Image (cartoon, rainbow, N blue to C red; front, side, top):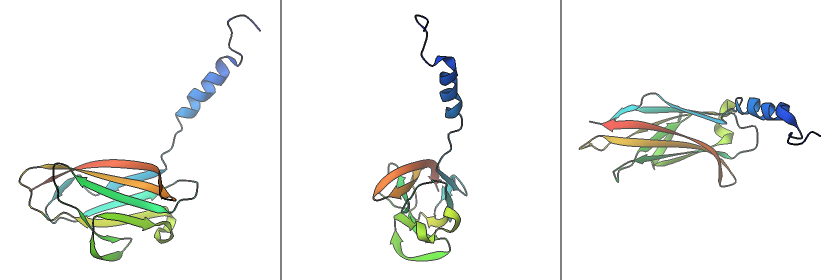
Length: 139
């Protein structure tokens, strides 16, 4: 081996560099709108492409600079009877690893608020991967 040369040379370095461009997210999360108003219907979609085992997804929402909550109304066409501010959707009720949910925020805002939505893949009470979306809540 030549003094100062790397044992695997640039070929291995380039291989690692090429693989990093093909990183695929295991969770995709979207909202119908990032502009939310009082009592408007929020529709969200979560698509999971995680190749391993998982129990389901959880969707958490924080209305920043507020003590108010969002309330989830349905998921995959199934109505939720009580007020739920944190939504867990079991993998068993996610056809094709997809979940769609509806939610509302019902308090009258005195100012604009940023709303943080976080969808996470859960396996044995542990978060595997998540995606965050920010939206704006205003009057």
